[in-house]
Image 1: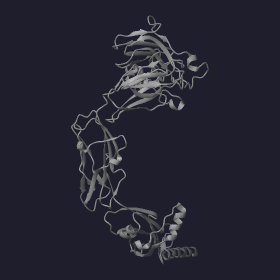
Image 2: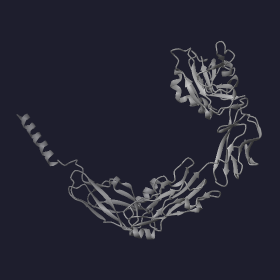
Image 3: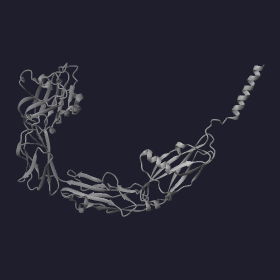
Image 4: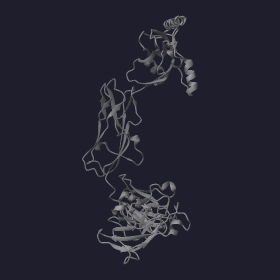
Length: 554
């Protein structure tokens, strides 16, 4: 019986304890600033009036009773902030803003805001535009504050609205109208403000000759129209305008149209790119004709030898400036023609030399340029590969069609880093390893005569190179002539030897000094060359790799 009485007493005691302490362990109401630390706000001002920033204070806890607290500036917090962030911010003088020092979060609510009023007119009058810092701290005489979220550094940036040109027709713009048959050409020149204007904003489009450099020609305004003054209505952000160029009337030449935005309204800042320097080109330098013994349509191609005064263009009646962008070649005018001289031969065994010759008509400022390509020792004069394409190919090469142009892109690696995308690797003949890989090269309608075909292996790894090839030529892709010493029998031609590929060593790696196996074709002028590549030195002989091919007159 005693046992049961003791048990009932214990239960009653426990129930009594729970009743007396049911709120034990509950979290008391606590105030905090959710976005403590740094709060930043940019205020774009056109109409100067006081600005109100709401400082939000939150309440957490179980009871959600009425909370009474204080808010004040705290320069000590700013000093500590500067020390931890390595900044040197200073507190804005309290005469430039105001706020209520007390706040109340009502019972049942979990937040309130304290309006901080920035006296913008006083700030601008005495301090100007910029960023100003106000450190704040919340407290309470009798209730809890979350210390780690009790401070706030308010950074208020005052800035002017910025006026610019909307879209891409700003800064320096180049348009070539050489192939434009239209009467006029229009460019949108709308002005844009980064806020809605609070008043009618006058915008001026003026010609600014200070943009025009010495030697440049400014276009006479009679050949274009643009509204000199536009108004952006109150409440808008964009004002429309157009530049209309009278192409049909504009004289041939290279012309500058320099237009700059401005406004008499000192409340608005002008963007750095609120201008247009348009370079408009009409016509071509037809008075200058490329020519000479080394012209191949759009390139001058010469051998590795030194050259003395070789004609590359006629320029009768043109007062021209002639320049070249490389120091191994000289370009100059003489007796109404343009010449080049190459004082020293190219002695680099695996590297072509390339330069661009530019002729500038002083009168029209029109330019005409051409590339000069000098071959390597022993290569003779190469055919202009910019005219080439692949006319046909065997099905076992189709999976590498996207890589075909690597064979005639005038690029081969000088080191391992350059070798990633320099070569073509043909691998798709596992079903019948005896089938050759076949590529048909189109040398272009205006190619010159040639006598040699050259294959450069993959210089990073030369082993997968052809032991045998077959070379055919044609003018119509139908009637083919087999070339080489075995043309009448097997039709194949011995290609690389192991010694060529490994340099007499056991390694086939990194032969960046350049290897080319040449095939003597005899004098040829046919447009198409068909290359059959048979087995390689790599294991089963299935893979064939090449960095570049050459068709040259040696």
